Image 1 (cartoon, rainbow, N blue to C red):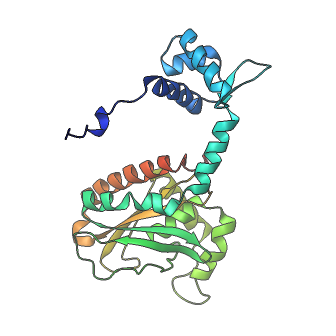
Image 2: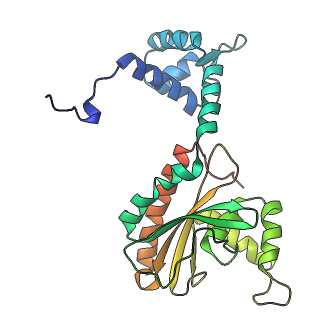
Image 3: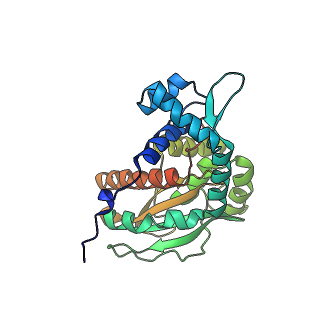
Length: 264
């Protein structure tokens, strides 16, 4: 029996791969593109690109404006994109990235989504380092005092987070409701660095680092966090773990079609 070919060596159809190069050039472009722009972006001669554009247009994968003559993604691709989004389970897609993140860092990993009353833990992968306690799946996290909460605080509209934030601080109880300046500083720091870091928040003796995952299908991000015992959370270790976390969340966002937070 013949040995199975390695995946990268399997024979494909070159013309299909070339056609997808043209489609990707349009997808990554700033908008409708001229033939010259598509050719430059795909690294092919205009005459060759034109033949592929004609075939792709016949199948509805590319559309050409009758007024400007420029090319853009066609109606068939829009239908395919909508159907792909309809079938996509964001939690499942992101969850597939978590075991690898745990194995590369050695730390416990959790995943949170936005619920009616704030961030909710929906997945937990235990790491190599023992934690004093863990947060159960289904737990609701406070916004300001946890790294996961700060991620949502930084990337969701205030109209969504403000009622939840008020509920986290009972009148007359400590800590006091944060001032607008405090909130602005937290939000600015998370947006600038791409991640949030807290220590002794939900679990005493534990540092957590969280970062958002964005999806094309929904304006609500997800949050992935690493939980690190403080004995394994020196500034250098936190920086290394944060770098690995951001690589993972960037890859997950790309898979979900997310383009990151809006500027501002």
